[in-house]
Length: 252
Ligand code: PGA
Image 1: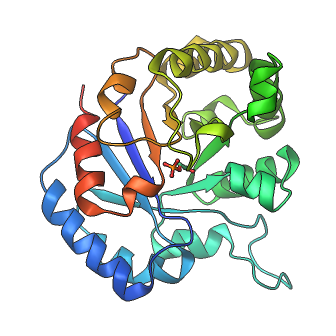
Image 2: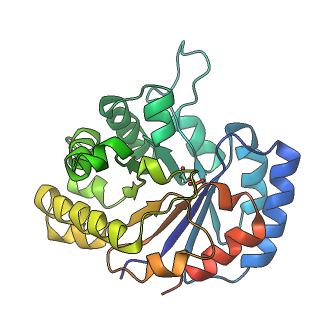
Protein backbone atom coordinates (compact mmCIF):
# COMPACT_ATOMS: atom_id res chain seq x y z
CA UNK A 1 0.00 0.00 0.00
CA UNK A 2 2.99 2.32 0.41
CA UNK A 3 4.30 3.01 -3.07
CA UNK A 4 8.11 2.87 -3.19
CA UNK A 5 9.62 6.35 -3.34
CA UNK A 6 13.10 7.16 -4.61
CA UNK A 7 14.32 10.77 -4.30
CA UNK A 8 17.62 12.16 -5.53
CA UNK A 9 19.27 14.93 -3.52
CA UNK A 10 21.76 16.65 -5.80
CA UNK A 11 23.09 18.89 -2.98
CA UNK A 12 25.37 21.67 -4.31
CA UNK A 13 26.02 19.99 -7.65
CA UNK A 14 25.18 20.82 -11.28
CA UNK A 15 24.90 24.12 -13.08
CA UNK A 16 21.70 24.77 -15.04
CA UNK A 17 23.10 23.32 -18.27
CA UNK A 18 24.47 20.27 -16.44
CA UNK A 19 21.15 19.79 -14.68
CA UNK A 20 19.23 19.88 -17.96
CA UNK A 21 21.62 17.36 -19.47
CA UNK A 22 21.24 15.00 -16.52
CA UNK A 23 17.46 15.27 -16.49
CA UNK A 24 17.26 14.56 -20.22
CA UNK A 25 19.10 11.29 -19.78
CA UNK A 26 17.19 10.36 -16.64
CA UNK A 27 13.78 10.93 -18.27
CA UNK A 28 14.80 8.66 -21.12
CA UNK A 29 15.94 5.90 -18.74
CA UNK A 30 12.90 5.96 -16.45
CA UNK A 31 10.15 6.70 -19.00
CA UNK A 32 6.99 4.75 -18.20
CA UNK A 33 8.29 3.69 -14.79
CA UNK A 34 5.14 3.96 -12.72
CA UNK A 35 5.69 1.47 -9.90
CA UNK A 36 8.00 3.88 -8.11
CA UNK A 37 7.40 7.49 -7.13
CA UNK A 38 10.42 9.47 -8.35
CA UNK A 39 11.62 12.92 -7.28
CA UNK A 40 14.78 14.94 -7.79
CA UNK A 41 16.06 17.85 -5.72
CA UNK A 42 18.35 20.10 -7.78
CA UNK A 43 19.87 23.32 -6.39
CA UNK A 44 17.58 26.39 -6.34
CA UNK A 45 19.10 27.85 -9.53
CA UNK A 46 17.98 24.85 -11.58
CA UNK A 47 14.48 24.38 -10.17
CA UNK A 48 12.65 26.51 -12.73
CA UNK A 49 14.29 25.22 -15.94
CA UNK A 50 14.13 21.64 -14.67
CA UNK A 51 10.46 22.08 -13.76
CA UNK A 52 9.66 23.07 -17.36
CA UNK A 53 11.29 19.89 -18.62
CA UNK A 54 9.58 17.65 -16.02
CA UNK A 55 6.05 18.79 -16.95
CA UNK A 56 3.95 15.78 -17.90
CA UNK A 57 6.67 13.33 -16.88
CA UNK A 58 6.78 10.75 -14.09
CA UNK A 59 9.47 12.65 -12.17
CA UNK A 60 8.50 15.16 -9.47
CA UNK A 61 10.44 18.18 -8.28
CA UNK A 62 11.78 18.75 -4.79
CA UNK A 63 13.74 21.58 -3.22
CA UNK A 64 16.58 20.89 -0.78
CA UNK A 65 15.61 23.45 1.86
CA UNK A 66 13.52 26.59 2.38
CA UNK A 67 12.75 29.39 4.84
CA UNK A 68 9.41 29.58 6.67
CA UNK A 69 8.16 33.08 5.80
CA UNK A 70 6.38 33.83 2.52
CA UNK A 71 8.44 36.96 1.84
CA UNK A 72 10.39 39.66 3.59
CA UNK A 73 13.84 40.97 4.42
CA UNK A 74 15.60 37.60 4.67
CA UNK A 75 18.60 37.95 2.38
CA UNK A 76 19.54 34.74 0.68
CA UNK A 77 16.43 32.78 1.65
CA UNK A 78 13.79 31.10 -0.54
CA UNK A 79 10.17 30.73 0.56
CA UNK A 80 7.68 27.86 0.21
CA UNK A 81 5.44 30.27 -1.73
CA UNK A 82 8.21 30.62 -4.35
CA UNK A 83 8.83 26.87 -4.39
CA UNK A 84 5.15 26.11 -4.89
CA UNK A 85 4.87 28.42 -7.90
CA UNK A 86 7.96 26.89 -9.48
CA UNK A 87 6.28 23.48 -9.22
CA UNK A 88 7.96 21.77 -6.27
CA UNK A 89 5.79 19.06 -4.73
CA UNK A 90 8.42 18.12 -2.13
CA UNK A 91 11.08 19.89 -0.09
CA UNK A 92 13.76 18.29 2.07
CA UNK A 93 14.00 19.78 5.58
CA UNK A 94 16.41 19.07 8.41
CA UNK A 95 18.97 17.30 6.26
CA UNK A 96 21.96 16.39 8.42
CA UNK A 97 24.15 18.81 6.47
CA UNK A 98 21.72 21.60 7.38
CA UNK A 99 21.67 20.44 10.99
CA UNK A 100 25.43 19.94 11.38
CA UNK A 101 27.09 22.44 9.02
CA UNK A 102 24.49 25.22 9.31
CA UNK A 103 23.41 24.65 12.89
CA UNK A 104 19.70 24.07 12.26
CA UNK A 105 17.69 22.64 15.11
CA UNK A 106 14.35 20.87 15.40
CA UNK A 107 12.53 24.14 15.97
CA UNK A 108 13.60 25.52 12.59
CA UNK A 109 12.83 22.20 10.92
CA UNK A 110 9.31 22.28 12.36
CA UNK A 111 8.69 25.85 11.22
CA UNK A 112 9.84 24.97 7.71
CA UNK A 113 7.71 21.81 7.60
CA UNK A 114 4.63 23.75 8.71
CA UNK A 115 5.18 26.50 6.14
CA UNK A 116 5.62 23.95 3.36
CA UNK A 117 2.42 22.14 4.33
CA UNK A 118 0.54 25.44 4.21
CA UNK A 119 1.63 25.82 0.60
CA UNK A 120 0.74 22.27 -0.39
CA UNK A 121 4.33 21.02 -0.51
CA UNK A 122 5.23 17.74 1.20
CA UNK A 123 8.18 18.06 3.55
CA UNK A 124 10.73 15.25 3.54
CA UNK A 125 11.80 15.48 7.18
CA UNK A 126 15.28 14.05 7.80
CA UNK A 127 16.43 12.49 11.05
CA UNK A 128 19.48 10.45 11.99
CA UNK A 129 22.12 9.89 14.61
CA UNK A 130 25.88 10.55 14.50
CA UNK A 131 28.48 7.81 14.93
CA UNK A 132 29.28 8.71 18.58
CA UNK A 133 25.54 8.65 19.35
CA UNK A 134 25.22 5.18 17.81
CA UNK A 135 28.32 3.92 19.61
CA UNK A 136 26.98 5.15 22.92
CA UNK A 137 23.70 3.30 22.29
CA UNK A 138 21.80 6.58 21.89
CA UNK A 139 20.70 6.23 18.25
CA UNK A 140 17.03 5.68 19.01
CA UNK A 141 16.91 8.34 21.70
CA UNK A 142 18.38 10.86 19.24
CA UNK A 143 15.96 9.99 16.46
CA UNK A 144 13.01 10.10 18.84
CA UNK A 145 14.05 13.54 20.05
CA UNK A 146 14.36 14.78 16.44
CA UNK A 147 10.97 13.34 15.46
CA UNK A 148 9.30 14.84 18.49
CA UNK A 149 10.84 18.28 17.97
CA UNK A 150 10.43 18.38 14.18
CA UNK A 151 6.78 17.24 14.10
CA UNK A 152 5.38 18.84 17.24
CA UNK A 153 1.81 20.05 16.70
CA UNK A 154 1.53 18.73 13.14
CA UNK A 155 -2.03 17.49 12.63
CA UNK A 156 -3.01 14.02 11.47
CA UNK A 157 -4.24 15.43 8.15
CA UNK A 158 -0.89 17.19 7.66
CA UNK A 159 0.98 14.01 8.58
CA UNK A 160 -0.61 12.20 5.61
CA UNK A 161 1.53 14.52 3.45
CA UNK A 162 4.81 14.21 5.37
CA UNK A 163 7.64 11.89 4.32
CA UNK A 164 10.30 10.82 6.83
CA UNK A 165 13.90 10.10 5.81
CA UNK A 166 16.15 8.20 8.20
CA UNK A 167 19.73 9.09 7.37
CA UNK A 168 22.38 7.96 9.83
CA UNK A 169 25.00 10.73 9.66
CA UNK A 170 27.85 8.18 9.65
CA UNK A 171 26.49 6.67 6.42
CA UNK A 172 26.09 9.89 4.41
CA UNK A 173 28.68 10.29 1.68
CA UNK A 174 31.01 7.85 3.45
CA UNK A 175 30.36 4.72 1.42
CA UNK A 176 29.30 3.04 4.70
CA UNK A 177 25.67 2.01 4.32
CA UNK A 178 23.71 0.88 7.34
CA UNK A 179 22.99 -2.83 6.92
CA UNK A 180 19.41 -3.56 5.87
CA UNK A 181 18.87 -4.94 9.39
CA UNK A 182 20.23 -1.81 11.10
CA UNK A 183 18.05 0.38 8.89
CA UNK A 184 14.98 -1.83 9.35
CA UNK A 185 15.41 -1.70 13.13
CA UNK A 186 15.32 2.10 13.08
CA UNK A 187 12.51 2.30 10.53
CA UNK A 188 10.36 0.00 12.68
CA UNK A 189 11.16 2.18 15.68
CA UNK A 190 10.13 5.31 13.74
CA UNK A 191 6.90 3.67 12.57
CA UNK A 192 6.13 2.65 16.12
CA UNK A 193 6.75 6.21 17.31
CA UNK A 194 4.46 7.55 14.55
CA UNK A 195 1.77 5.14 15.74
CA UNK A 196 2.00 6.45 19.29
CA UNK A 197 2.07 10.08 18.20
CA UNK A 198 -0.46 10.08 15.36
CA UNK A 199 -2.24 6.72 15.39
CA UNK A 200 -1.98 3.46 13.50
CA UNK A 201 -3.37 4.75 10.18
CA UNK A 202 -0.68 7.40 9.88
CA UNK A 203 2.02 4.95 10.98
CA UNK A 204 1.08 2.39 8.36
CA UNK A 205 0.65 4.85 5.50
CA UNK A 206 3.68 7.12 6.12
CA UNK A 207 6.62 6.63 3.75
CA UNK A 208 9.92 6.21 5.60
CA UNK A 209 12.94 6.50 3.31
CA UNK A 210 16.47 5.36 4.08
CA UNK A 211 19.41 7.58 3.12
CA UNK A 212 23.16 7.17 3.34
CA UNK A 213 25.37 5.72 0.56
CA UNK A 214 22.49 4.10 -1.31
CA UNK A 215 23.80 2.57 -4.55
CA UNK A 216 22.51 0.28 -7.31
CA UNK A 217 24.21 -2.61 -5.49
CA UNK A 218 22.52 -2.17 -2.11
CA UNK A 219 19.04 -0.86 -2.94
CA UNK A 220 17.40 -4.26 -3.29
CA UNK A 221 18.61 -5.48 0.09
CA UNK A 222 17.24 -2.34 1.71
CA UNK A 223 13.92 -2.50 -0.12
CA UNK A 224 13.45 -6.11 0.98
CA UNK A 225 12.91 -4.80 4.51
CA UNK A 226 9.33 -4.40 5.65
CA UNK A 227 9.53 -0.82 6.89
CA UNK A 228 11.87 0.65 4.27
CA UNK A 229 9.72 2.40 1.68
CA UNK A 230 12.38 3.93 -0.52
CA UNK A 231 15.56 5.94 -0.50
CA UNK A 232 16.94 9.46 -0.38
CA UNK A 233 19.97 9.22 -2.64
CA UNK A 234 22.84 11.71 -2.69
CA UNK A 235 26.00 10.91 -4.66
CA UNK A 236 24.51 8.13 -6.77
CA UNK A 237 21.71 10.41 -8.01
CA UNK A 238 24.23 12.60 -9.85
CA UNK A 239 24.66 9.97 -12.52
CA UNK A 240 21.52 9.23 -14.56
CA UNK A 241 22.39 5.57 -15.16
CA UNK A 242 23.08 4.76 -11.51
CA UNK A 243 20.01 6.70 -10.30
CA UNK A 244 17.83 4.91 -12.88
CA UNK A 245 19.21 1.57 -11.67
CA UNK A 246 18.34 2.50 -8.08
CA UNK A 247 14.81 3.44 -9.20
CA UNK A 248 14.39 0.09 -10.92
CA UNK A 249 15.85 -1.67 -7.87
CA UNK A 250 13.32 0.16 -5.72
CA UNK A 251 10.37 -1.77 -7.17
CA UNK A 252 8.73 -4.30 -4.88
P1 PGA B 1 24.72 9.94 -0.04
O1 PGA B 1 23.83 11.12 0.53
O2 PGA B 1 23.80 9.03 -0.83
O3 PGA B 1 25.74 10.62 -0.92
O4 PGA B 1 25.34 9.23 1.11
C1 PGA B 1 22.53 10.88 1.03
C2 PGA B 1 21.91 12.15 1.54
O5 PGA B 1 22.63 12.96 2.14
O6 PGA B 1 20.71 12.39 1.34
